[in-house]
Length: 252
Ligand SMILES: NC(=O)c1ccc[n+]([C@@H]2O[C@H](COP(=O)([O-])OP(=O)(O)OC[C@H]3O[C@@H](n4cnc5c(N)ncnc54)[C@H](O)[C@@H]3O)[C@@H](O)[C@H]2O)c1
Image (cartoon, rainbow, N blue to C red; front, side, top):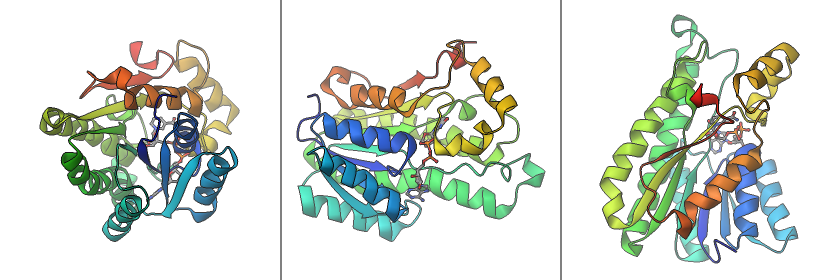
């Protein structure tokens, strides 16, 4: 096992990529904190880990709410006494409402930035003092090709993900010397609930499949395997990096 006794907070671990990372981390021996806004799915992830004889704690958390994040970090320390890994995964994509800039409502813009950017900021803000004290830690941010290239009809989401790229570099510059490794995963099009609406349109599904040279959509598990590597000692010299798992999408 590659993460034995590591304490890992995973935000948005109720479904999709976050859930896959939570299950795989637990299988690799980590003690997993499921920080999820949705009680039903968050509990279900923790229950699945327990059923597999793993260790997990569900803490209902809206990552955009400072008091929730503070309480989640306190609950983690109360239960496990340390924090080794933070996976900043929770995000929203308001498909159909996040369009061209002049059509995007302030509500869509503000909530997208609140969860996708401010949420990353808040979780890191409360976890970093713990990691600094431990002189050890690993933070994985979830970036996106939409933040690195121009995509149509995704103004708020793309902006939030572009900011995650900058945030990852800034964090790596400040914390690598403290033995806290900060990296970003850049998933391609992954078959998760986030894309369910878009992928339910067969023409759109085929278009998205064709965009990646690998000729298929990614799975949440394609990402969870990379997340294990980045959190493990195998990635000891990896800091400030952007790691695509995208079937070649960004290469063409
Ligand atoms: N799926 C893709 O194709 C893809 C591509 C690139 C990047 N990403 C990124 O990967 C990450 C995971 O994506 P996914 O496809 O699994 O998403 P998803 O929508 O399937 O799951 C997101 C999870 O986050 C939770 N969540 C939403 N708002 C929250 C909040 N305020 N506080 C706590 N939890 C909250 C949701 O309840 C859900 O469980 C996101 O950061 C996303 O931007 C996904």
